[in-house]
Every structure is written in structure tokens, then in C-alpha cells.
Image (cartoon, rainbow, N blue to C red; front, side):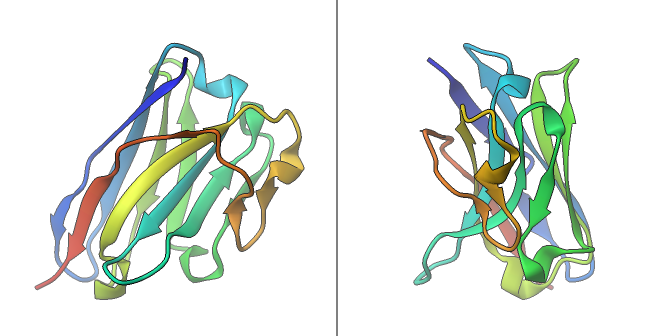
Amino acid sequence: QLQLVESGGGLVQPGGSLRLSCAASGSRLDEYAIGWFRQAPGKEREGVACLSRRAVTATYADTMKGRFTIVMDNAKNTVSLQMNSLKPDDTATYYCAANRSPYSTICADGVGLRQVEYWGQGTQVTVSS
């Protein structure tokens, strides 16, 4: 059973950067497609970024392109989300998620991970001065 744990959230000023990490236990993360999602208070959960199995394909939501980067670290069995040029609108709880699909199309450009089989518990990111 795959278990996901996010870390790296916190308070950052507008224009700053944060690096979130999604660590796995129970399995190798490169055997899964990994997605990052976020949910702000009063809003629906939205896809942020997605990395297909074995990091073949990376996709991003339109508002994150050029600011966020999703990266797999096989040695640490983690997937990170590097977030730059943060804005107050990026304030949300960020979740990582996984799907066992071997197909790169599980990651949709502008949407993220199409289907989720496993969720992490989330980490809070607050962008404020």
C-alpha cells in the first residue's frame, strides 16, 4: 500500500519560493504517475502539476507554467514541487497524489493527474506579506 507524505509548506512573502516534497513509503514513486493538487478555502481542489510514470511527461496548470517545476528524485524516492514567484493567490493546502497508470496521458496539460488512487494528507502554503 502506497503512503504519501508531503512536507515543505509554510509562510512565504509574495515573490518568494518554496519547495514542497512528497515522500513515499510502501513502493517506489517512479512506478507511479504523481500529481500535485491544491485547495484554497472556499474553492474546489485543482490540479497544479503532474509527472507521468518514470518522469516521461510533465504537465502544469496554465497559471503555474514557468513558475512551478515538478521533479522526481529517485535516490530519495520523493517528488518535489519547486514553486517560484509565489503570489497570494497561491495560498492553499497542497496535496500530492498518485496513480499506477503506465500511460503518459494520465497527465493532462492544464489539468494535471486525471485520476487519483492515492492521496497525501496535505501541507499548507501561505503567501503573505
